[in-house]
Picture (cartoon, rainbow, N blue to C red):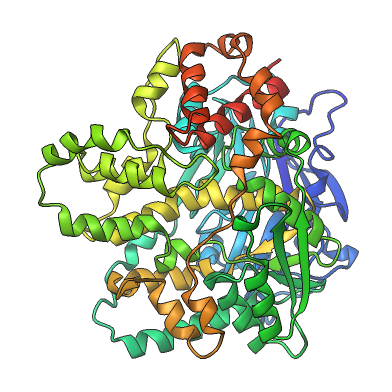
Length: 613
């Protein structure tokens, strides 16, 4: 888990491109010139802690150079196939990636199980190869003009190298719609994100990007598989995914919420360990309804773990600027602050932890999947009926404490009067198109990425369509983005066994009936855990890692609201103050839950102040 940098032009005078994001890799930082490129690396040492494994790493022949961020968990198996031809100098996965590329070129990607963003430079042919893992766990951003090319793990590094970047106004609109800027866009017009499951070749101004994997290719391949066979195969896949992610030369643990996802991971970790697992649980001071520490304690006791309970008192006033700094662009999911605090505290005990991100998308955990099943039952009701019902639902007040359930119910009813793709987009979106057009004095169209992804999935199964769309949009641009940014801010590595690509392929290949069955979300995971963990854990309602937004808006964020959402600040950004004032009134009166809308505007203003003032 590191930071990578590369560019083929002269860096500005007194540039600190190598140190500007050195928290990603505090154990070693180095850069050097190779051919027409300068390559740099910030290393967080996880596997093979010796100096010889530092990067940039040059092949024995002297022609190939790699900079790599991430982990390839099955590197030992790949290495065995290469040892007869290549003399290895390290015990690192970096060297395995390099020689596997030399052997197979882009076909090497088919072998890798893991999370990665890397480039390999062929000095003799002046050709740069780069790739990002299948799910987009690790970030990769790049800049290109006619003659120049630069890449990095974070936008701030490219900003340090390239001056005069301009704001991407389409990205601002997308941010307000989704609370994130979806790839390939970034907040800057000239900077792009390499999309997940893509590789590229760059040579002398020419960039060619290719997709190498897609979950849609597995749809329905094992549709007729019986439940017993499914459970047997899934048990094997989960066990192997967890086992591989326990390989490390530093202290390792697991995040434990007491929910299904983290409990599944802990079960398989305990199965593959001969010593107690380190577990870490996050709790809130004075916010009991968001707290899962008692369930986590039950699981920790059940598996006799070395348990750490981390109770936080997040000071949002201090943390908001830090969060915005590490994202480099507006990001509207406040759960990111919790991950920052969790990884900061966990770093005192370990350097790596396994986490359950992706379990909801893969196994059917979100309420919107239940909404999809309900829609299938009522889709024959004319849309005009739901349109006529909407005004009555709008009269119902919402919970503004930070519990979004009632808002979601109203959104669901409102969406039923729309085509199915727009219905789904409403479920995962915030500011409506009309609201965005009202907010800004100058209106601009933007690509509604979620709609495009949803409509490109070749299936009529609404559960499959929503799940894969979530994987390609919500997971990568939201959950994985904040997982990487906030953990790396604390020089900490998070590993995600539930989104091992083999599990995704398998779950996509079987009938979607096994995601939610007999009214149970995550049916297969609960079936696997039956008898292995306490029934209270299996049967508990989903809570999720949510911040106490209601408390924050009433207390910590009062100062931000009065200054960041003042008439002067709002109009300075070309926004309609009357509309922002209306949002505040709706929220404060309890009429509508506008907590995340207000938070996103506060974040946007903080981003402006850090980057454009």
